[in-house]
Image (cartoon, rainbow over all chains, first blue to last red; front, top):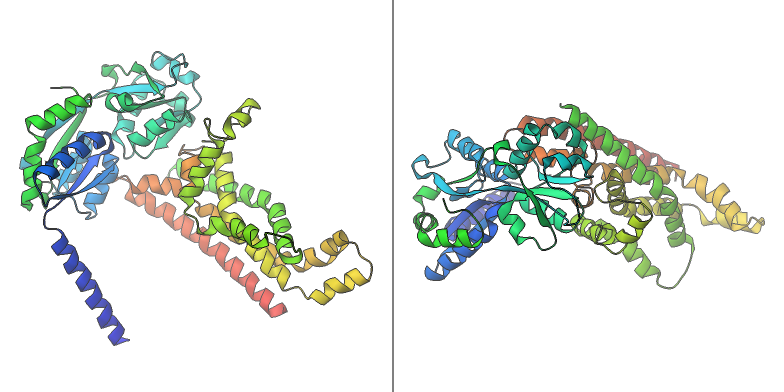
Length: 249
Length: 224
């Protein structure tokens, strides 16, 4: 029994060591799902210019990402789709506070099939099923729910809201026409093939969609992560953001 | 716990009961075919019936979505007669039924195979037609295994996640079952304790069903 235990510990030790050596030249990104295309393009071009750097990219709802980082998931750079989850990690002392800055902004829109006669928030109660990101962990859903509350129709829609795990899933539901419409970001809506933007959610109904970015404490010690972080603040990043429809501010 | 948690528990029970109830007659018929009938392609049939047991539930969910979705193969047909399944609790029932079905069939089959063939032969030599043998010999003698299989399937349905989240969506109070509610809690940093209480509920439910199932199994082996 003791022998087995010793072997087990040895194996685990080996695994841990292997893991540590594999970390060299690796940059772990935890990024809001709505930035998937932007970050993919930026990290690909960066990896081409800097041979030997490997990116481990983790896209998802910002709340879910914050939860993972809080529980020790490897992450060097975190980009959230709202200020709340960045603040949350900052309060847990997991972020390098000095590095935190704003990456970009976005706008909330409502998408659906073009034949749906929906032109404003007031038309929403007529619909059967509406997809939003789960407000517990997806910022796009938090913004959407806030807008619904401000418009005073959140109670009427309560049983019609399909909770998606991130904003991309929301868009997928609308694309497949499984829902009548979905709240997504303008930049996601541009990617859609079937679904059309039915209306832009009035800006006075929700706080501005802001993407804060920052190095985690482990990321601040990773040279490659720092280099890529600089790249994210540079002119190349601006150009790619603009290409995907993010506002230049 | 939140009111929406109670909704999730009730809904899970409702979905699992419906899935088991509708699968029972079909499961019994399939088990009967596998045990007593000889036909071509039996192995293939068996593999297909058992497939959901080993297939990732997400794959099943995705196929159901392709099949039943609005732009799917069967979806437009169903829509034309006014049936919409995707993102309703009925879709959760279908997903659970497909995933749990092999467990039901396996259990019933084991029960049927343990019936002394002499009893069946005796009933046949006494001139009983097949349906008489079925209802007076096979059904009562495999009753316990039917209950055992149903309980196993019921437990599996309670926990069904992968296929359900794809076809039933995640609508609190409408299609959000216990696993989906837990998933939502788990992915949010601020509701850890909520997840734990629902986890405890689902552990208790699973444990009590499995104890019931095991005690049935003990009785079965004692009888033999």
